[in-house]
Image 1 (cartoon, rainbow over the protein chains, first blue to last red):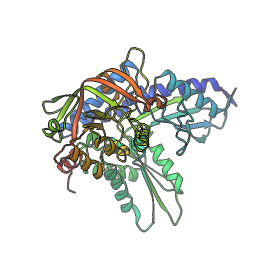
Image 2 (cartoon, rainbow over the protein chains, first blue to last red):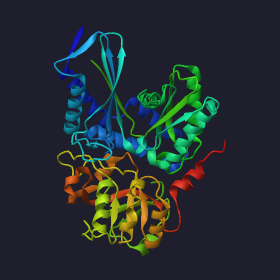
Image 3 (cartoon, chains in turn blue, yellow):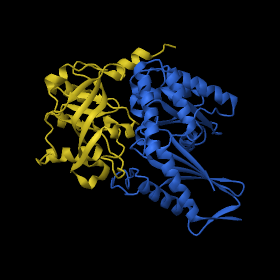
Length: 280
Length: 187
């Protein structure tokens, strides 16, 4: 059994919080640069240019490129032959978030409950999803999730008879309804299958895939291309000011489901698309 | 942005706002007051209880933002606009009391738009997600009310050439609707 010190997890999480909030991933920057070339609206191009400039300034000064430094979401892949020592994994992650958000001058945006809206003061608790895997590794994938776009996300329990066409319509309708509020150009995470909560979780996890990397399943990759084309036909455009680049990428994840079910969830991410990875 | 920008100096007036048109690119210099969800809820409470307002809204602009902490040497931490529709239930209270501008992102309700047209208030969009660039245009920042709200406290910002676009003017113009119609592809 491989032993990993809890303090190492804390340090890695601290670094992830700062990296994710101050540096846009290269795959996302590439997607933005491509959108700049393809955008037909002059105002839309101007918006994308500003986003790219903003990313430069944030990186140079090591400051957050968006003030909404979001929920700290982690997907944790813990190897079956590894364990954390000297403290619990959950506590180690929370401590890393506490330090990262303080030392990185990041905004603390989490309140105690939807009813008691007192700020927790340190952006904890982290939102942690565990995935058991084989091996000795520990992989941490962080997604910084802003609320503006999360608020425009949606889930629908379709019937098998409604099928894939209704699913596509629901994705596009969700984006039409979000309009400018979700801060396009978007990254769109779509989760389908499983019971109710699985679809939502898959939609969130889909956002962590490197921007524009297609699903390995060719049918799903085709579905992603078709959805992207339909979304970019809406005309919403960068910042919602009108244009041809409403989304940079659509990532679809699928899971087996029940004979009676066709759940679909759409999780939207704004153009401040923040992911970072660490392997211990 | 793509057009030659219009320079505006605060405070604004209803008459001055008449000349602004949806899609106009504007550089604001002067004062912005920051306020978002929690501050607006307190303003409403103050109005309902006959208390005093944290600032006199006459001619002023509210910027819907909650900045990140500033690094030493910076007037303000990164501060981009938040979704304005969450302030829809509150905005008419300030507009009726003389507010002449709002800076945010996203669509406003019909009730807010009507109140804006009635009282000469314009809604400007700032590009969300450009928080580092926008903070650069802030020369001074001072908490003037509700300090306990942290990022959500009301701050008085002194800005220079703060870049915005007119989203909703006083003549029924709506950049979001017009932009979408202009660029929608019929499939």
